[in-house]
Length: 169
Image (tube, rainbow, N blue to C red; front, top):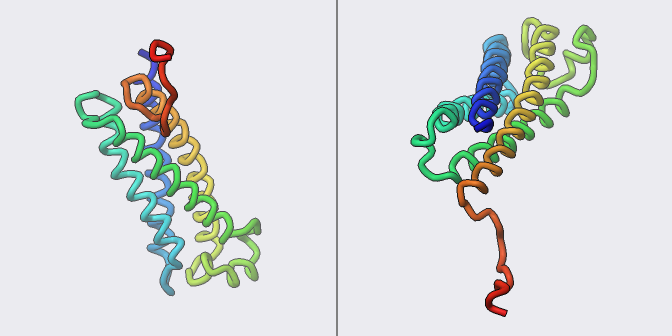
C-alpha cells in the first residue's frame, strides 16, 4: 500500500514547515516593542492549530486504529488548507513586494514597524510567508489523499439524490 508511506512523508514535511513557521512568527512576536498587529497573532494561531492537528493526523497516518471516523482527517485537512491559505494571502498582502532594506517601507508598514530591527522583522515575515505557501501545498496534497482514502474506505462523499438503479427500471 503506497498511501501510508506517502501520507507519513507529507505529515513529516508539514511538521517541518509548521515548526519553521512557529519559530519565525514566535521570533517576530518576541522582537516587537510596540505590540503586534492582529495578523501576526493570526499567523501564530494558524501555526499552533496546524501543529495540534498534526499530533492527531500523524498518529492516524501511522495506524488506522487512531482514526476513529474517516471524516475527522478530512475535516482537519480542510480546515488547515483554509487557514493556511488565508494566512499566506493575508501576510503576503500586508507585506507587499518591497525591499526589506528600504527604511521608508519598513517604517510605514504596520507589520514591520514597531520593532527595533525592522529589516530583520521584515525578512522573518517574508520567510514565514514563503513557508506558509509551502505548508499550504503540503496540506492540500494531504487533503486530496484524505478524500481519496475516505472514498476507498466506504465513506459516501456524494451529495444529492441519485436516480434509480437499472434493476428498478
